[in-house]
Image (cartoon, rainbow, N blue to C red; front, top):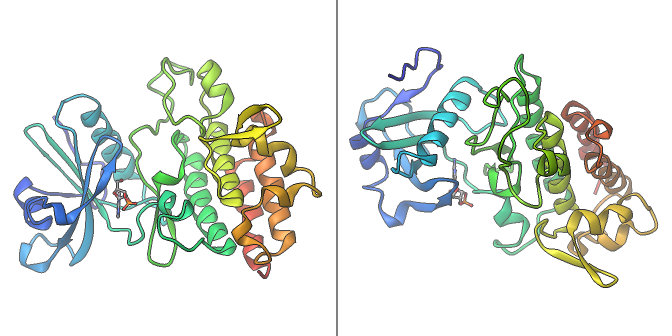
Length: 311
Ligand code: ACK
């Protein structure tokens, strides 16, 4: 029996209402596949008479297999139902009928960061837009980490960062987020979950999951923003193909080599001081030793002033 008494301002939708909102989950409303379900665009309008303001929404329908899809639905309801922040995607409501599990979010006009960063939309993102996106995402992570019981996001990567029309960024997909309590009295989880290329080395090798695992993943995305290269691909260095972090790490801390890895489409369109600060920050976030990484609060403090430096 699922009680929503601890949730603030969450609307419970009927399946019928969600069918109306998404025009019967029509293919014209289909946005894409995420985690454990499909996402559709919808529109809440006043004719529904459910007391919600008229607005566009994104409706995620989780897999109906009773397994991972249901677990992800519950994790999202519990976490996003309680945590409200300008840089976490807003959960407007949910539906739970028979084995149907759906989630209704605010609609984010520009979809996810992955599609923008890796050029699905043509023109490259300007450097300061990239910093604005990173700063927003950093504030979202900082908020999660700062709670009485810190929440570890665990799956920080561009496809989980959603963008509004003015490039405000919000974290989405909390199906893997955890306060660590599911692994009995320690943060050592039995199976490593997350995404190759983004997960911290100590998490992959020993299952040790801390807020510093999120900081490493943040460093990977920061590096992707600097280089416009994907973390999961291999890059040649002498005879060996290396992943992005290993390939770029030495050049991040060498001012004479830094320009070799910066996204060429940014050339001449950034302040060198800002790029250097961002590169030094990425280097620290990507430390092998979790204790050498900055906290997300420090990341926020470091990134903020870069926005004030002129292009
Ligand atoms: O790049 P996209 O359009 O942004 O493709 C993916 C797809 O659904 C699967 O995750 C999009 N999506 C997810 N949540 C939202 C949302 N709240 N607003 C707009 N689009 C969303 C995501």
